Length: 82
Image (cartoon, rainbow, N blue to C red; front, side, top):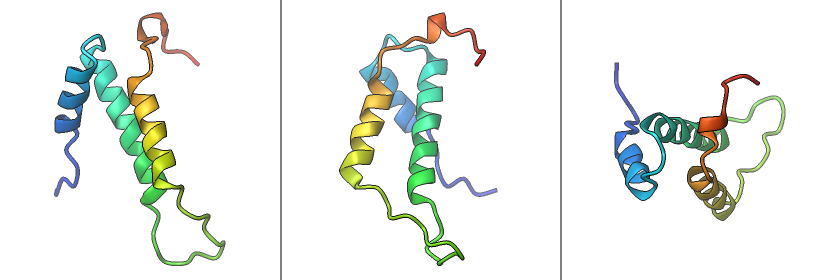
């Protein structure tokens, strides 16, 4: 299996920038950020039966990801239930 993405360098950077986050929360935030990028930009370029929506503006995605990655932690009060 070929690995196209390794999150470890990004987890290290985030962990150093926000040392108050637990390793689990760093991993979760990186996973969510990567998922958002893949959802936004990972669509096939081939036209589908329904016209795809345009890609979001890059600056909007960057601003959202930074806010997502650096938001205050609420993990301690999270019970894991929705």
